[in-house]
Amino acid sequence: MSTGGHHSPRLRLLVDWHHDARAARPVIREFFAGVRILGRGFGMWRTHPKLLALGLVPALIAFVLLAAALTPFGLALGSITDWITPFADGWVTPWRELLRAGLGAVLLIAALALAGAVFTALTLTIGDPFYQRIWRGIERSLGGPEPTGDTGLMTTIGEGIRLIVLGVLVALLTLVIGFLPLVGGVLASVVGVVLSGRLVARELTGRAFDARGLTTYSRSELLGSGRARVIGFGVATQLCFLVPLGAIVTMPAAVAGSTILARSLTERAPASLQTADPPPPPRA
Image 1 (cartoon, rainbow, N blue to C red):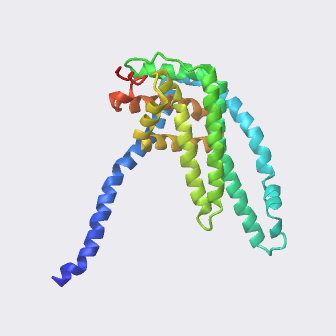
Image 2 (cartoon, rainbow, N blue to C red):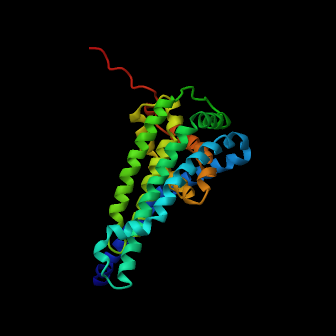
Image 3 (cartoon, helix red, strand yellow):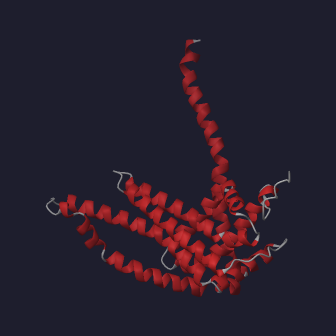
């Protein structure tokens, strides 16, 4: 009896671990489902090359503008870190170099987290007519009823400004996390990619949701119901953006993939979330 009692806490821990692992499987499966949806978006380059090619020029323009801003920042990073840390001038080698290199890495991580949001906002605003054609073409290729709503340019600009503001907040959070001892750099990288990826995914699905006439509440509920899938799609997109010149080719594929993502979230949602407007309150 004593032996069984001696092993029961260990057995309980094993059972709890197994239960937690089983509970995590659907989340992991949904995350990689989002990654695969971006893969389907890239697959549209093979089946709809002319359609997706429409999005290359706006993405290239936005990339050039962003590179023109980031390149001087990167070149001046050493001077910036020296200016921020004058107290380290008298430190001995290698501590001074390690401090400033770590600070430079944190600043670069924060800048890249913001860059993804700014690139998305700029590209969608510059190429609004082209990306409208892309998502509508993908909707038709998926079959079923095609949403008939439209997104005006002012709405696109407003959403872009909102995305940039939220991107600044994510960059600031990433910057703060980056100063944590030992784990700051790694943790800041993960948090930056995940949060900025989610912002990008939300922005990219905006056209498909707006065309369905969904309210802000319904849109948020849909994204929340498939949170792991949305994050998987957004993280994969954000990582592709970080590949040199990858953002230009990725953007049209991401717009196509976001259309598939919005369709998948809408189809499995309760009917109450698929309505354009809430029902009017009953009269007294």
